[in-house]
Image: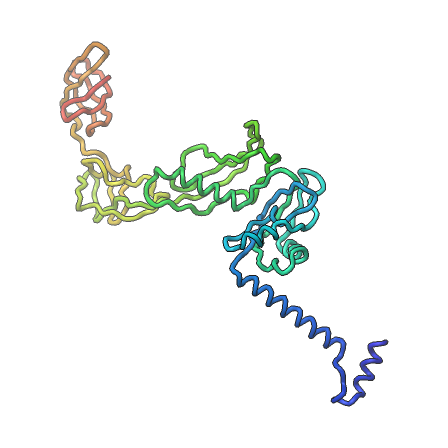
Length: 342
């Protein structure tokens, strides 16, 4: 009623003497406030520093402090961060082991309320989980731990290592500050999908919890490819082979071009990767050929004639038939004339 009367009275005044309405004054004040706030935010952003909020954190006391849930960026002035990190925020969960989860939107509002203008410089996760007591390992730390583990484990693979599609827990809470997190694998790092296992280990060395993870490991290196079609049993010569950069995750059995002499066991097409299964050593012993079968024992060495029952190269296993006893025996090819049995 009061405002209606005021509006009516102002409307009847001459335009040159009409005062600004209360609503217009409020809007102008709000616009000025927002402009100042935006200018302050721009000034802070212009400093080139950010504060990264973790997605998981543990606090020892009854109140959450900024330094317990966030980390300073590279360009943050040390003295400024020292002051900001002590900033008291909202109450922590009441009991040890209890957790509180804040969505990104809620977290942003809380930081603006407790921190003020500096809240514009925060980099926020999708969710922050705060636990009273214990120790938190956030997602970024888990990712770094996995990358370092796989990089070190893949040093013997050769070529250029690349880790993609890394899947780790969003965070891991350790019950006590003295606990630690181990990362293991059931087998060695290899090209392709690798399964990881995060283990929460107590101070006494007891594994209390396990979390699964995985990553795809690409290993790029040059492998042998055919320059033209190579038919079965054809000898492999240098002009038939070129080397191209390939991802070993998809060519784990690719031939590296070493050893030999080789022949093709399975036909290979032009530009096709030559797998170790597609080649075999050129046989020095042919099926049906006569060889010397040498038997070596602790104190005895015997030599008898035998017939090869298959083709074989040096170092390969071959089955032969003893000419005298007619028995079939398996031995190792030493050269074009000799098979050794131990």
